Amino acid sequence: MAIKFGRPIELRDTPRRQTDALASPSLDLTIRMRRNRKTEWARRLVRENVLTTDDLIWPMFVVDGHNARTPVASMPGVERLTVDQIVRDAERAAKLNIPCIALFPFTEPSLRDEQGSEALNPDNLVCQAVRAIKKEFPDIGVLCDVALDPFTSHGHDGLIEGGKILNDETVAVLVKQALTQAEAGCDVIAPSDMMDGRIGAIREALDDNGFGDVQIMSYAAKYASAFYGPFRDAIGSAKTLTGDKRTYQMDSANSDEALREVELDIAEGADMVMVKPGMPYLDIVRRVKDHFAMPTFVYQVSGEYAMIAGAAANGWIDGERAMMESLVGFKRAGADGILTYFAPKAAEKIKAES
Ligand SMILES: NCC(=O)CCC(=O)O
Ligand SMILES: [Mg+2]
Image (spheres, rainbow, N blue to C red):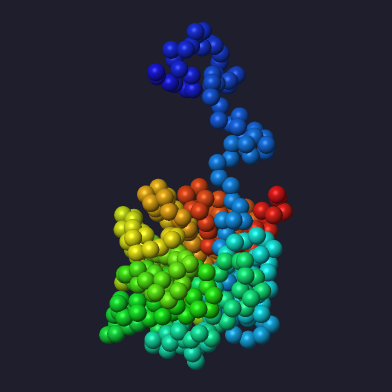
């Protein structure tokens, strides 16, 4: 049936009104999409996606010291926290019903070396923070990033030889890093390094060492991105990073390749998969969710946060609305959860409105 201007032509029993369209601009529309938007209650009724606090993972930066909170200049509103302060924010997360927090260390430059040895120190900042949080708040999920970049003097995620990032040798170290974090009490191991084969190797090691219940969230489709800049400030690797990460992180032009990466990580034992960054890669989130029907996460990275928080701080956009719009956008794209530096703010807003 041909439909023109809203009503099937075949159903038109009376001739169109012979009015002067300009004088009386009344369109003969059967369907008017605006009816469902006319009031707040109607909009709520037809709303397709809702952001809840259950969707949030809160990334936090841990730094050495006591009772200190240092602002990260390029991430307005985000601070590096000493372990005692991380515990205070874990309490805030628990009160806000945020299910999980993610930990990233600022490693003292004197502790960084070519091999990222500090990653294997069972008393490193991340392990201290995990133990402190788990002691006071055992019911909150703690996720630990697995990669060497916060610990290496060169700022890369893996070992380097002759200018090349070594894959299999790096995986062997990452396995030890994951075990160190699991020993400390970490609930979710999240490898972000993009080495081939690391998920399978880590899964096997966890299982062989009595950590069969520890989950793996793989940064499965992680792109080489300009949007990680402020994070590198936060963990102190911005100045030391030599070159870029394009030999291991994905090319932003690729989409099918993301499906192959995700498929491999699932086959190797990932319980949850992640796409990163978020906003420029919503199409990848949708494809991954549709293709694999896996618990699918997305990381709204530091640069995305900085764009919104920075513009809001300058009065150029409404920061709260932009925050909520960006977060529900991830839900609409198919994400089951979002790692976002906005987590506490968004949770507070959700709580205030419920
Ligand atoms: N492995 C964790 C990250 O690289 C985070 C990046 C960001 O927030 O920019
Ligand atoms: Mg991979």
